[in-house]
Image (tube, rainbow, N blue to C red; front, top):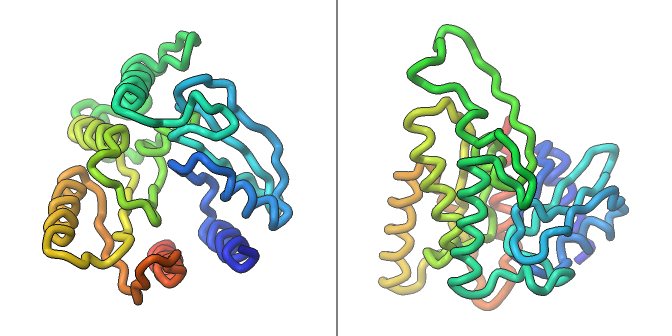
Length: 240
C-alpha cells in the first residue's frame, strides 16, 4: 500500500494532474492520499442520490488534488450507482446540467454549449482561450485532458458512454480541443473478448478518444501493478 501510494502521488505531482475521477464507492484513494500526508481541505458530499458535484479536495505539496466520486460514495449510501433506474436518472441530471447549467435546485444560465466558441462564428486567426470553471466532473470531459486508467469501460457504463457521445456531437460545432485517452487494461484471453475489445476501440475512436494499447506482463487474478507502471510511463512521456 505504501509503495502504491508513493507511486500514485509521484505520478500526479510530476505530471501536474490535479483531478481524479473514480467509479469506486470505497475510500481507498482517500486512504492513499492521507497516508502520504495530503490534507483534506474541503468536501462536497451534499447530494443525496446523484453525484454530479460530489468531491473531496486535498492539499499536497502546496497543490490541490480534487477527488470526484462519480458513481457515489459509501458515506452517502443512497448515492451508490446500482441498477438501470439510477443510471438513467443520473444521465437525466447530466443532460440537465449540460443543456441548462442546472445544479440541483440552483438555477443558472450557463449551459456547456455557451462555454465554447462556435466554429461557424469564431475567428480561427485568433487564438481563443476558453477557461471553464470545473463546477462538476462533467466539465472535465469538455475542457481537460482525460486519462482512463485501470477502467474497463464496459458498455454497461451507460453514463460515461452517453457523455462521450455528447462531447463528440458538440465537437462538430464547437471549439472543443481537449484530449481523452483510454489505456486498454488487460490482454484479451478469448476470441469473444478480443472481438469486444476491437468493437470498443472502434467506438471510442469514432467519439474522438485515443485508444492506447498497453504492453505489460498480465498476471491473472492479481492487481497487475506492471500495467499501472507502464501507463504512468506512457503518460509521462506524452506530456514531455
